[in-house]
Image (cartoon, rainbow, N blue to C red; front, side, top):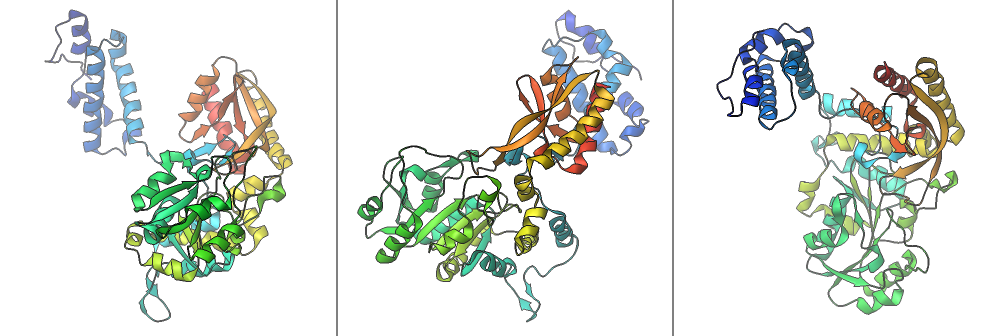
Length: 478
């Protein structure tokens, strides 16, 4: 390939030499079309990316970025251009290996799905389905009926509706039941969750008026009683699943609030946030109310997420009294917030697993990770330790350490789950360089840095990912 001068040389002589060394696009195309590694890149994309890379280098030169004539040599220039093109062609939505110890990791896709659910998603997308077709009558059906019966069976509710996430669930409930009316909420429950989602903001969007009662740490039944007016639309309780107020505190329990709501003919709604169908306190975690328990307390409407403690796809699930749920279903917002066939198929698959609780605990990955004894995690860590010490003990100090995992997903903020981690202390790299190198792998490995060591928490690693972690570290250290 011939390096040719360019016509747009800058005035500064120090840059002119490097600018003249920039290659012609046609010469680059001719050279790169012969590279087997780029065989899958279309001519149009190749041309666009070559122009983009040359322009990027040109701008670097003009900005005074330190480059030498050696950087412009054909072999080095082409090699870097190939790396640039491969990076740009790489799929953006990619698999990662979660070694953070955060089980329901919001930034890494929250709950992962079991094989049964993935099989269901394949058929939902790869074949026609009865999404809105009643196979019994041969007429148009309702997509919600596909999971409503299961949700009622598992929660004890009279009716159910599913929208695309829990924020949407809260929005449509408020907009249906309290638009233009007042909603009474305990001041200590006005939470903000990830993505700057705040209860007061969603309430404002719904057209409801917020009425705060009580103090930040203590709210009494009389606070609700005194705030009720002829314009009160509902009493809202928000389960503080992502933070805790401890010490001198008090909240009104569901039975008291439900009794008050019945006396004044005002519906009571509880946003559970990260709702769960299984009592996880048996695994040493703090007791969290299950959806079944909240429904049984008499609350009129309960909302919760599908992709957090439930362990399914992203969804906002609404269960409660049939009369109210039917009204919510008729809200025009429902069409804008409705779920697609993939969510329906995935959610039905997950819910079916809950019909047998031991099966759910064993097969739903999020629950299995929470329930796994630390001895099981330790065995996984030792299997990886043996592989790493065999192949790279000269390049890195490797050990197993006690660590702490988290449930994540805005749930159980005070809960530490005992775990085991592989601790890596590289000899010739900094810990930050090692973390970055693992993150840049084709299948990124995401750990966490503590005490100048990179920790790979084995509680959130699947057994078939051990070989991939081993391979990535071998590539880095070799």
